[in-house]
Image 1 (cartoon, rainbow, N blue to C red):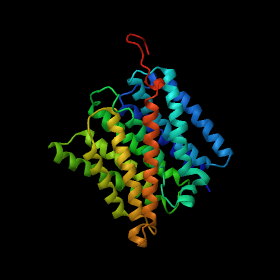
Image 2 (cartoon, rainbow, N blue to C red; image 1 turned 30 degrees about the horizontal axis):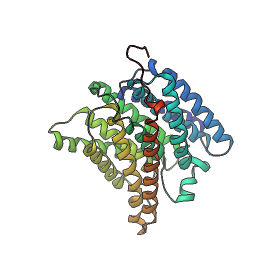
Image 3 (cartoon, rainbow, N blue to C red; image 1 turned 120 degrees about the vertical axis):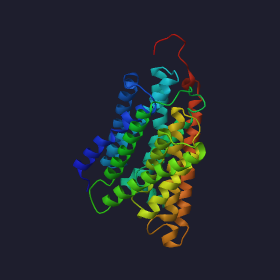
Image 4 (spheres, one colour; image 1 turned 90 degrees about the horizontal axis):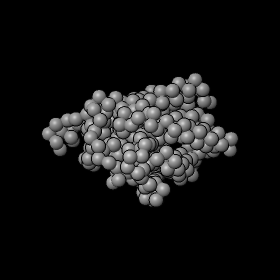
Amino acid sequence: MADPVLVLASGFFVLGCLPGMILLTEGSLTRILGDLTFTVILLGSIACLSIWLGWMLSGFAVLIGVFILGLSAGFASMLDAEGLNLRNRILTELVFCSLLLVPLTGLVFGGTGTLLYREFGALDFAGGVPLAIGTAAAFAALIRGAKTRSAPSSGKLLLGSTFVALAGLSLAIGIELQIDEVTPEILRNYTAIVCAAVIAAAGIERIKRGRNSLEGLACGMLSGMAAGFAACAYLEIIPAAILGLLAGGLSEVARRGSGAAQRLAIPLAVGGLVGLIHLGIFAEETGFVYSGQFSQLFSQLGLAGIAAAWSFAISFALIRLPIARAKIPIGEKR
């Protein structure tokens, strides 16, 4: 039975994703207010419809919808920087939401949250598929065309990544829908994953560049959050720490450039994929280490592959449509 107080409190703290994403993308809330208003109406309509049809529990709809709102703020900020006018931005966001995030969210949380495991035998506790892989694909599609901008100030990077990571923790706690015996494990594992990811990213960056930067720490924090989405409820503490080290280290190895799209796409994609696959080996009871069977690993690999292929195909196809590439003439106000 869901605890409405917990869901509402978690939803309030999940809202921290919104200012966090704006800080990470150097966006302006006033410039994307129309996009966010549209997103609220769209997500609210989809949530009400899914609850009415029995596709998704109300608690899942509230928490996932609030986090997607924050992610949409970052996406709208990037589109604004690319010079897309409000009409085209909203159309692009509508198609992304309809063809990308809604199907992936329904896959994970449909059927009162049991569809994914019941039908496919795969695990994804807090939505690593839509919130990490799906969103990473949307940002990755913007990398080649995005304007090269300097990284925001150190204070903005640190504050933005902290806001987003804390919003992810609030989401993971709220997704359980009540305080029970799993809640301490979620808090412990999520914290261990994020901290280990930051440490690993810092170590790899020191080896690569001979110094550490707040951008590298932000990369580790975001990758740890993305990995924790899928796995934080299904691991013991040692496998959780190993997951964080893998996610943070691989994200830093893959990190290229300093643009806003790179800062978000790479850690989200790497963390999300590593978190999903890691469960095939270390998930309690069903992972290979515990069961001696490869079935869970195969399920996780299949889920990760299908989610990545779908997300990146939809994202790169959409961003190349003429309506998505229409630029504002020089000198015209946005």
